[in-house]
Length: 171
Image 1 (cartoon, rainbow, N blue to C red):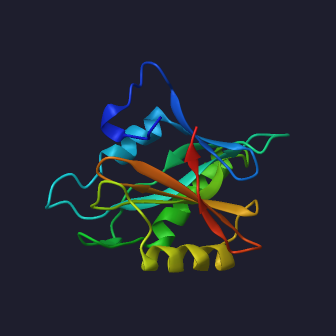
Image 2: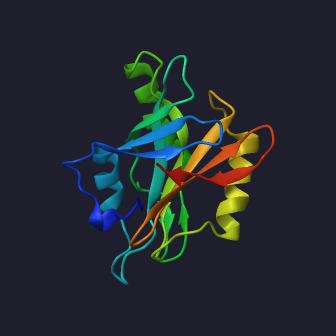
């Protein structure tokens, strides 16, 4: 099954599932998919958009669920082919969600759009992701990176220790 935004059937499935290299799964609920879809660059005037992904690790399991995302905010910088997130505004939301959830809703990674059908990370994306793996503070060995293209959404997992980044397969 391909992860095609426009051909999804939300009534038959409540989420998309990507398979992680460790055998775990990462679930992306339809509410999150619909929210990201609002920003898909399906018209020439639309700039890139992005934010952070938050969610939870499932106890005694390698599974992860992305429950929430932030949206583009004042201070973020975007063009047709770039998006730079202003850290403080998004961090405020991460902190608020962490406290409101009793320390279970945590920072999981980043999402953004690309003006291409089947997105792949640019050199700038890969450089930025590796920098996040090195400098960001997060609860596990992994961060997740989602790029929404005009036809398909793709997800990658980056590992803090090895600094490797691998594309995840849709289950």
